[in-house]
Image (cartoon, rainbow, N blue to C red; front, side, top):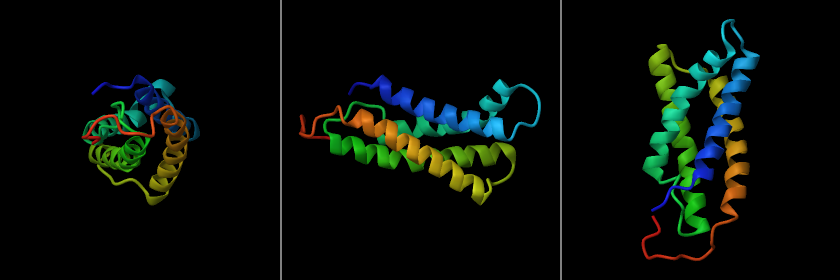
Length: 130
């Protein structure tokens, strides 16, 4: 299996936009770059682990497999990110934060990965697609 770099880039840009927006609207002083890094790291780690688990960064054999992998990857990656964020900050995220984060990342990932998925074949090329 081969890693598709555009899928890594899409997820990184979504998480960067999410983190930069959060840092901008909830700026508490100090370096903006450090605030973005503080926000992005648990979600980047969560997405990396989810990407391995769901094979979300590998070129899929079919468009259907790609969409199924992406559909599983998003909530798993966000869930792991919320867990890591809560574990390191010593508190669970608020329900409002979870709703906003899931909505923003869900819509932007659907757009980015949807465009990327259009380039994959609709037919299987091997017997073991997952």
